[in-house]
Length: 284
Image 1 (cartoon, rainbow, N blue to C red):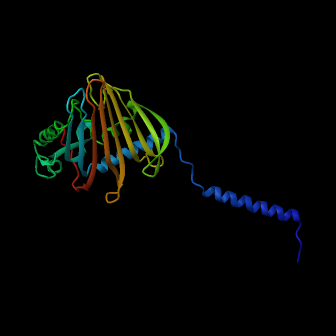
Image 2: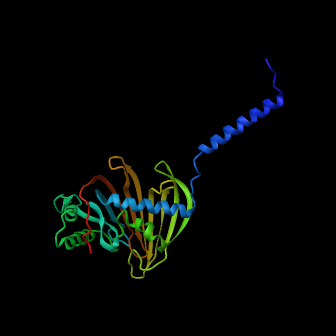
Image 3: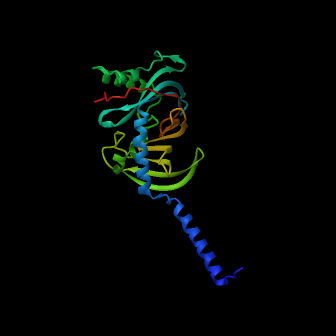
């Protein structure tokens, strides 16, 4: 047996260790960029794709509303059951449409997908029919606040890729949401006209909790302070395996003012179903 000098053996071992380390380093994935600009790019891309996917989805909404008693006055409660559809609405982008079919357990119309039918097979007066349906449904909201922000996807428009320039965004901390570490991204609307019209042109603010690697939306919050009224709408998302989408499953809302009774609402969503015909723009 030929004895090797100890120095050569040590040098060989060191070289081998260094080579192995370099090989492992080469296989390590690049570190995820979690800076605010990178998060906004992923969030915008996710919402852009999400809204296109959701445009072929209808869900059933079960919506509890309550007006609290104040100054000896009686409160009020109401339960609405509706179809909720997201569709293209001209320059407005993607808009949610609610069609109520039951109020406090009593049917107000047949349980048919009439909104879907209007979008799949548009006629000359489809736009007018859709507007009539939505207006009739909104009149069933309880309380003194005339509102159209009580749809779960309303806040998404603020983070669309093409609309992000209208708001100022800030990166917040992390929070576990649905078992996933979520990054908070806050926004404050800056530009006019406002997405939500109010008499005093109040700016909206809110939060998105997103998965950093994909931009997937896990939870949202929308807040508007207009006059003496504070409106707050929060939405939670959950995975729907059959559709391979994360969709709203819960919406909570609260409208408060020093002089009026508080209005609260809680909506849940299920029975998600997709229709195959491409949605066409019928709202001009």
